[in-house]
Length: 213
Image (cartoon, rainbow, N blue to C red; front, side, top):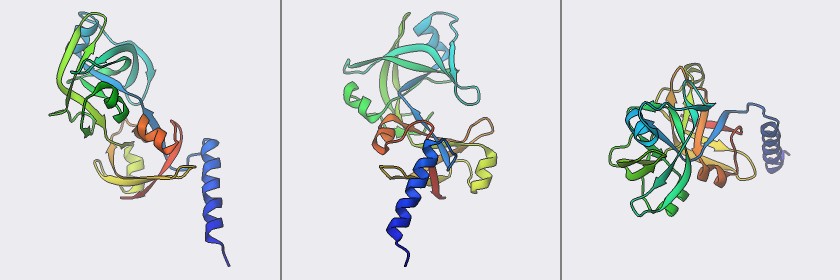
């Protein structure tokens, strides 16, 4: 008679070994630390007239982590220094932080998809040349998966579908209603913040499985 517990343990061990070896057992994970997106107007206020961001590390498509950093200052005058700016510039500035960051900053941002900033929390940004106050724009980014059209077709997924995702490691975790964004210039990758990553014991480069549509 098959010992189901033993089979389950062996399966989890195999998945863990494959992940450690870098094998693709599902969707790759990218852990997003706190960061800022800037409009051109706000970039010039913070860094000077005509300023352009300096790419430090390419991400996906035309997106990159810039050399530039700013300081976040909340309405309660709590601050976090050295917050990375991501490029290229956007039409509106946006701040993405984790729930843990909210305790230090004493703010209550909503959990939102990137770009949905209406009615979100206020935040001040301080750069070497000036300061910008955002009446809204600070969010906690929702868990989401960037996906190529080819991979979306393979999974039977459309843009903005919601899926359940499972992490099989020493701290098995399941996330529900994870938003999928499909675009030709994306790499297929699930993005979570540092709180989610630490809670589930995962890091950038690990893999998760999509369970349901």
